[in-house]
Length: 354
Image 1 (cartoon, rainbow, N blue to C red):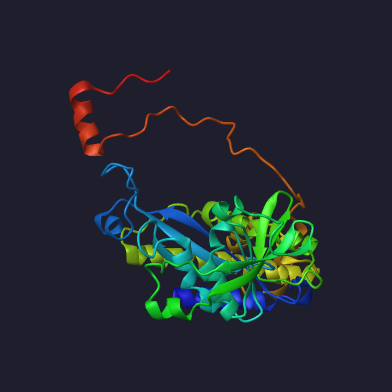
Image 2 (cartoon, helix red, strand yellow):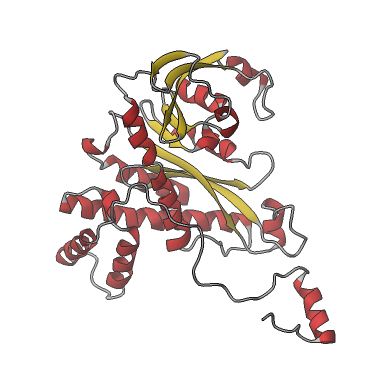
């Protein structure tokens, strides 16, 4: 039920996008994955085991989440939850369960992890276009002197179907895959991109460059869900309730996006130009005043306030992945907690680190 509500609200928000939010006539869908941790319970560890590098009793169950979001509005259209490692736990496997979210003519936009032969073949069979960064291993062997040249460092290449059948694919599925694929490979701003849009006239190189820059929006969407809403660590003690908790977070996220979309329509601006955190703070403050929800004047005032705060346009922004304020100098827990308690009883607390 919760997953249906999330998909319904996401589709409702995305359907409200007018033509200026489309790219080359296509609806752009962003895909990306992330991880969240759960409480260290036996049930959670059995379904979402902690990382193998951690000793028993020292780690936390970890799961992977892959989401499909709308580029124009930021709404979550669908999501899947699975293991961090093991069969069916990679981003590719989870994305395959979400492919019915895409309709013919849609555009899938993702990072280098999704640029694989079988995903590209599946998308072409569904008439869904794609734009990914070239996978690192293939990027090292890219040679723009080969293939059909379309322009400067822009050409068509032919991919041959891998001879080894993946373990997740049946013999029938492998046999149904085409023997080869023709895709477009181009270099822009130091990045090598691949796409199923092969015509350089209808889709020039600069247009693909501008589109791929917008892929960063999905990173901001995930940050809003995990950090702004607080989904970095789930609180439920069983996998079933943990999955429900994830859908509740996504539903709350979509409802905030719905407010932003309504505000954008009223102010005649694009939803992506509005601040998610500003909208969330306004909603929490407004709902705390216990105003009647059917007071149209109050709701209109709220929507106008949402539109007052816009997000700055900072293309090519670069920030260091470091923090200025240092955390407290506590050592890491290297033994199970009950063993450390016994050591403290016998020897006392260790001396503080200066």
